[in-house]
Length: 104
Image (cartoon, rainbow, N blue to C red):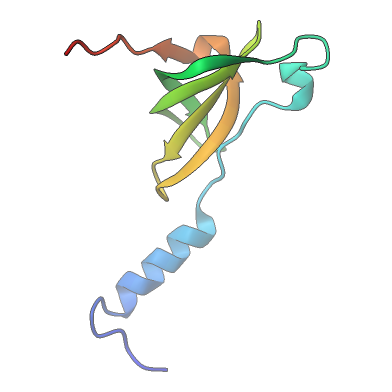
């Protein structure tokens, strides 16, 4: 197999290792959100917020859009920092802080 002339082998090896070992964000379970007894309500428009996302070894505060909620949790959409992929997750209500509206 040839050598990667643009980035070198060590860059590619580190990228592959990072991809394989990356942690998945943890979302609340269906039991925790309890949608059977407390159904989700959709926001008419997504609302900008900051939210804490938990990973197995750390917590990260991300900019997100709140898209749904119930009395105990908020469903958010966010760009996962490590891989720049859009995700959705349920988080506890107190893990979310609304962003103030931007003035023109």
